Length: 114
Image 1 (cartoon, rainbow, N blue to C red):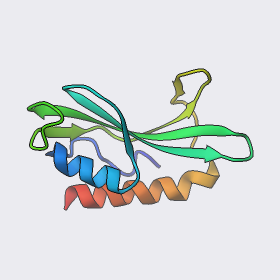
Image 2 (image 1 turned 120 degrees about the horizontal axis):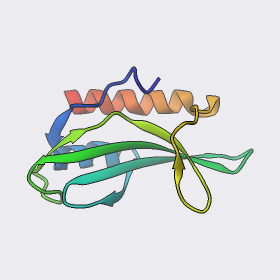
Image 3 (image 1 turned 90 degrees about the horizontal axis):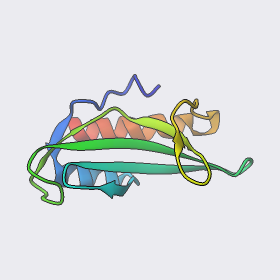
Image 4 (image 1 turned 90 degrees about the vertical axis):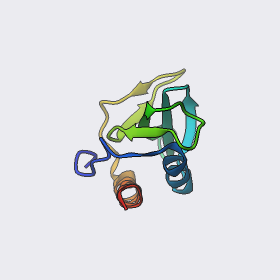
């Protein structure tokens, strides 16, 4: 599913990416001068397991925190949180989250390619 919605190569200003992704519910958890990581958290009540939909943006012109810097997106990744810290990217997206993940990625793609 993640391969079907291509975000890789989309270039926008940092301000546009920040506005679109945070508007959709992503949180920018980590960043530095050259990259930003946007995560959307999913929690499975039955197992207590946390998962993250992650989109990475890399600065290709300018530095982050400057809304006019140009960033290029990578394709989205889905991961399971591993205690005490770390992410397992080899997991399948649980059935309970597939529709929500597809929907938010489609909306992000539409808004970022308009």
